Length: 527
Image 1 (cartoon, rainbow, N blue to C red):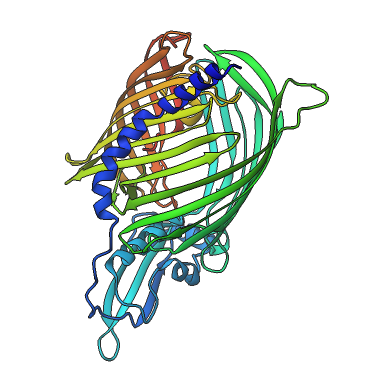
Image 2: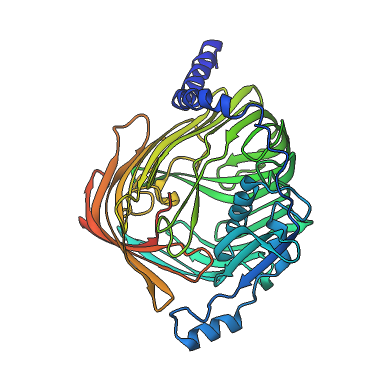
């Protein structure tokens, strides 16, 4: 390649991230003021004397479920251990009261994914009317069966198995799921322990046995577990020996074999940590062996890369707590925190990584814009989107979402395939849209019909219109759309209560093959 060719490709790589850089400019100005020196707290804040843990089972005596259902569920379920709840709290006896840390403790308990109800507050109790921090929780049914089937455009996809999110009451997750799609069969095994060593050390492992290969990954370390955390250190790794497929216009155009071995270490420190905002410096080192080759290639290529990253994170805390948004019968924390992440990447040249998020809120709703970009000398990935949510009409959650993405020179099998992410028109089949350009627009009204059917289920309806697709840079935009109605339903006693949907509607656009009317049963889209 000539120097002029390299310069041209580098110029395109640098230019591909400009939408995200503009978003960063909009976020950075107000953020600079928010991440300055924290305001001095009053010196006379009360001191927490004791911690009170109140953990209820799945069903209470006042619940509407049949007695035999409640008794069976409560009898089979292992209630969350009190020490699990205590470890998530960010305040201890002897600490000064901090309302921001009380709110964050409540969010951290919900993030565990084992409760259907969480409330952290304070009460006065005992001799001397001393201040107590009280955590009240209600467990959810934590054994999640995974059974689904979808047939869209002749593409059949199914899976079955289970995920236990609260193994023996310890908030440890174990999972076993077997499934099949038009590309392959796979068996997934997973394990997550949020307090593997001490109160905060996280361990995650995942292994997938594929009909055409195998994948494995792990992560161990101490993340920034709270806004005021002073430091973080994490080590991770990944192995892969798999077949990768590339599609174009619903047709397979390339099959290659992918071998990967990757290990890395990342860590960061916080500058003037506090409960309301953060400024963090971080860095990472990664060693990677990765190659792609045609099946049967001998000897297989052997390429080794070393990557160094260094960057800064700036942000402030802003959450909204919603109900009837992505799930039923629970409070959901929606992260609207404005922030930016900037990093330089060194690997056979200098590249960049960037993320930005901004938001505005009003009574009953919010709007959020996000953008991500990364790239090097000749490869880039840029994606940006906006989401508007309104609950200003009782029983309705109106959602407007739009996003787009751009790739240059992606690795084989890393092209946009919105179906795999469930970020595409919902009545189209696998690989109907693939490419290096993507769009998706959706307008949906989630209407609550019944929030407590026999104390077990919630049901809703959602008329929808969505439109989008993916295509390559050397072809005209290839998109499709659908309009219809979906029946949304989800459990009210499960730990997460993720909604499923049975959607039916009319399909239109370039991607339509076969009948114009389609139906699908799948996991509901989450925003």
